Length: 597
Ligand code: MV4
Image (cartoon, rainbow, N blue to C red):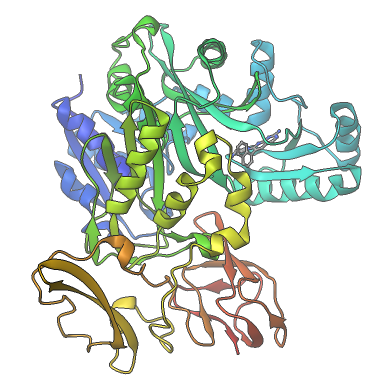
């Protein structure tokens, strides 16, 4: 077994891996960017090294630097976590060349699954059911029309280099095919430098069901059951659960075999996930993710298997510690991704500094987080603050437990998805195990999640929330008051105290429950007539014109940051009197986007 392993990642997954290493008696080497010097993953590591500047290309994606640090520290293996270099076949190969073990699959398996057309071809030959469509690239619109006729409309045009929904366009009929085809090709070129497109039959309201597999270098391939990840928004998973509410024992065995066949067909090794679409009794292979996934925890909760530990054992050449017949599912687990995002503002990123942070705890609760009080959610990296996972005997109880844990969670003053998760889990649709797709798109319903607080800082563009408490500003304060021996919470609305006065009520009592307090203010500090950019990035599209009258919530522009497209919407209705962004330009966090009077 290894004595020392470098963890080439940050945040919660770096900590997750380091925890497994510590339990195995393996020393961990952490790496960090200049933006992450004070983050918890650096403290969790037994030793830590600076990679470089905050931008990922110069830090967490810097292959040469990471390999030289592994050598310097004497690490025998590298765990890539997810994202960054996890599915980079070139990196896996470079590790091999440098004599460091890559804790993941062979480069050839990463590469085979990286090309979605190649993966479909291999799966088709291996007898794995794929979504009906082409396995070879479609070269032209004419070619696309010919193939789509055979497949039948609606069809999905997908970028071969894609995955997870990037470069995915739907054509309901032939009239819309050209636009969908060109759009998928353009996005494929932009994100993966590969304009290759393939076509699938577009399935209406499928469920996203994926199967966890483990494979060792001795020919053992097993599956650990499935996860349902149907609650997504623009292909970002938001809630995941295991087992899937609509998969029975017969289907589990069937899709488990599909997944192990898929893994075996590419000579897989390590932990991996076979993603597919479930439509009733049918299951179709979509793609395979050749990494440990964000949502691996729900599988750990219901199987009792530590997936990261298995990855390390496998990479060290050992056999799987369990056989297929040892895998037993117990109870139900749910994971909510706690992102710093404003659900009621089109899920716009809401980065900023966390002043106050209390995690839930108690029976059946697991929190995998990478931040703490004082930490900063930066627009440079993923906006996920933490993953909250609950387990209980059945789905209904796990849901009640999740609602309780969400209620205990205190993260301020950032806007997070906590109100969104509470609202979704309280719906009848969730209770019935429906996909809730209508809700994640329903503007009105999402708007209802907005914190209804008085205008706290009317003229504070770009100012941090913590600075925005001048004496001319209205604010709410909560106090605990005891009347005849009974505790009452009272809200006082008036002029805020000056910035340097103690904001904590001097009662010595616990803060009032979360539900009686207001949510924090939105990231970006848009207020009054100024719309401020909450993040740094490139302006992909400007949807309004100077002089136009627009509604509150109307799309203003799309800003790309970290390969994510973020829709910036109007924080109020009015006339656009100034427009400070243009397509192709760049904006910084806190920059003016527009004035809406
Ligand atoms: C599809 C689809 C319908 N038909 N492919 C791909 C990536 C993943 N994030 C969702 N993907 C989909 N691929 C075909 N041929 C519908 C989706 C889809 C989806 C599937 C299940 C549950 C929620 C979803 C939300 C958006 C898109």
